[in-house]
Structure formats: structure tokens, C-alpha cells
Image (cartoon, rainbow over all chains, first blue to last red; front, side, top):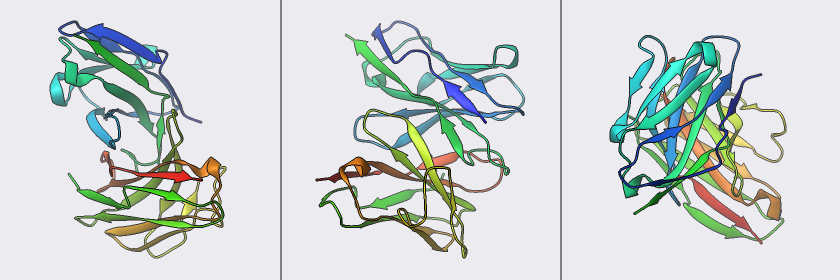
Length: 116
Length: 114
């Protein structure tokens, strides 16, 4: 069965500093990988996705992620964090037969705090 | 991307009662899903809502507790039956517009059972 691990439960960074959130997955086939962000009291917003092709993917709000098959990782990065980035971030893998975001398995999430 | 509306956005319910949550999408979508997010935890897939047939439930979830309907390609409901405080969670509707497409989520329904 597929699984997703986000090793960092909480991360605190200063505004303007760089950010990297870690994600490791376990899946037997080529994975469909996603990063979502959840602000307090809100639903999930898709930041970016990886299906195939270029292993460095760009997303919204200045985020990017790199797929590394050899390390089973899909880490999220941002060069300069803004206070509004404070939220919870979820990594997910899609494992349904029709691919994509079908039947997502989520990691436990990383809570990002931004210090001004 | 599809626009997903969930109703209600939140509710406080008495134990032993049932609540039906609605999910409306502004376009026809191939797949609809229901997830649960328990307090302070991640999201867990409850079931896939199949249009015109019975939903497909994940391990640990049963139809008697979480009956699901999907009468057409734009609408689905999830009922949380015979509620207990352990059912207090955020319930989220998710859709995929087609094969090999990303999933979009509604704003969720925050349920508190007292």
C-alpha cells in the first residue's frame, strides 16, 4: 500500500528566509504527487503536482518541488517566505487506477510558522 | 478548475442524530470523493462516490455509517449517521475532472458532535 511521510510536524522560519518541506513516499508504480496547503478554517488548495516529465515543477505562490525517484522524495521549496505562507502543508500521492488525484493518500502535514 | 460548494460549512449536532452534507460542482466531473480530517490530523479517504451506483468505501468505513449518494455528475451527498463525539471532524468533498487530473477540494464541513 502507498504511504507518505512528512518528517517535520512543525517548522518555523523567518520572513524572507528560504523554505524546504520534506516529503517521502512509498508507492510501487510511477507516483502522482501533490502538495496542498490548508489555511486555518479553509479547505485544501493545490500548490503543484508532478505526473511525469521534468522533475522540477513550478507551482503557485512561488513554490516549486523536485521529484527524486532514487530518494522517493518530493520536497517543496520556496526561496523567500512571506508571512502569508503560514499554514499547514500536505504532501499526497495518488494511487487510483485512473491516475492523477484519484484516491489520495496524505502525509501527516507540516505546520509552517513564519516569524516577522 | 472546478468550483466546489459544500453545505453546510459547519454544524453542531446532538449525538445519535444524522447530518447530510452536500457537495455541488459547477461542471460535470468524472470522479467525486469524500475525505475526513479528524482534529489535528491528516486527511483520510472515506469513499469514492460513483454516479448511479453504490459508493466504494475504504477500509474502516461502512455504508451504514456513511451513506453516500451521487445522482448525477455534479452533485453528491455524504450522511454521517447515528453520530457520536468521535465523528467530530472536517468532512471534505473532492473532485477529479477526468483521468490523470489533479483533485480539487471543497472548503469542507466542520462537524462538532455534542
